[in-house]
Amino acid sequence: MFLYPIKKVHKLIIGSFIGPFILTFFIALFILLMQFLFKYIDDLVGKGLEWYVVLELMAYASSTLVPMALPLAILLSSIMTFGNLGEHYELVALKSSGISLRRIMMPLITIVFFISIGAFFFSNIVMPYANLKMGALMWDVRNQKPSLAIKAGEFYNGIDGYSIRVAEKDEEKNALKNIVIYNHTANNGNMNVLMADSGKMLKSDNDRYLVIELYNGISYEEAGVPGTINNRKQLTRVKFKEHEVKFDLSTFQLNRTDENLFKDHYTMLNLSQLKYYKDSLNERLTRDKAFFNQNYALYTSMNKSFKLDSSVKMIENAKLNTNIIRNFKQEDRTMIYSRAFSTIRNVASYTESAKTDLDNMKEKIRRHEIEEHRKFTLPFACMILFFIGAPLGAIIRKGGLGMPIVISIFFFIFFHILSITGEKMARQDVVPVWQGMWMASFILTPIGIFITRKASSDSALLNLDVYTNFFKKLFGKKSK
Image 1 (cartoon, rainbow, N blue to C red):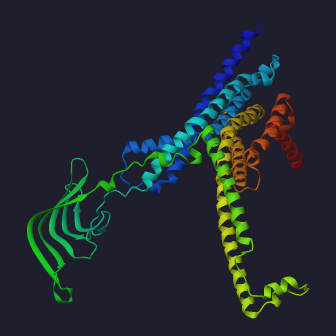
Image 2: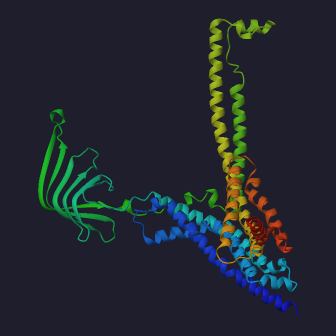
Image 3: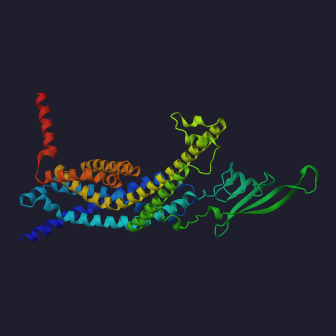
């Protein structure tokens, strides 16, 4: 008898959560995607990219932004769901019927738990693939030449080996007037020039070549004459009524780089691959340390082949309390000082170089460890932010997109700042990697437990209406 209404309540709560969750997830993803486009707008504009290339890049970028959009969507939708239930007194009705807040939250806890598991598999499987695809595509886009755009009155140097200038250009008919083309392919200066009164600009069917048909022009070409005195030049001038110049546009096409060149980057690896590369780096680090210690011992040991005259034997037999260097001859002292300074410089240079290499190796290992922990911090963050958002919604009793957005943005920014700070500290070896990556979770977990307990016990500590009424009464009395 008691299970049927509970099932009905579960359906009500789940239905109230799914809609806001999907809506807020895609809104957050869209906002983050716009931020991505603004960040890389200079790399995309003016490259003449096909629409499907831009769409592919946005799809991969959207996948990489899910770790930020998903926790924010869970936080905001949970506040909205329980805020709506509290605003319409549905939470009050459920509690008055003997159903605790924890039992009301149980269906959403189950859903968020499965979402967190899905977030783990997404972070471990989909994210490395999306990072690999987006990284390779962004590399190609950044190295892509700007699209062909010959403007009137300006020299265009986008085509390798040529400089083109037109006085007037008709965009609709592709007609050109007063054309000057400098051919620099021979790398000998302005020795080959084409000038024409008019012309027409066309492209081949496969867009591989640009063809400029020139009308009523002159060709100037200067070339050295072999065997002449002072390397004299011979000028060849040819008049023409029609002349055709063909330019290769293959460099303007988007060339896709082999993705295998990027696949060993730490952001493009799953857990098993991260463990394999991390173990390899640790083995390499151990070998480098042993190699450094061995070479350092060789640098600092006494070179037995270095022998001085009989003064050495004199010092070995003497028991002196003064500085030992004074017992050598002047020329021997000079040799010893020179040898010592040279050894010190070599040791210092080698030590500095080895330290830099070892520090770089340690940083690579830390970055791989950071990515390992990131696979687990994302699903855990989803659970924590739900246990913050759901009781907060029950406390503030405000639905919609007003107060919930303000509160969720505040907590999400706080969580994001903690995450970035902890990751930076771990990357710089200020704290161990596990402490830096889990710092935000360690701080927010007690907050979530505290808010959940206060909301379950209907404590007035976090009830905003109590503080609002208190200040109203306080200032109302003073005004009288």
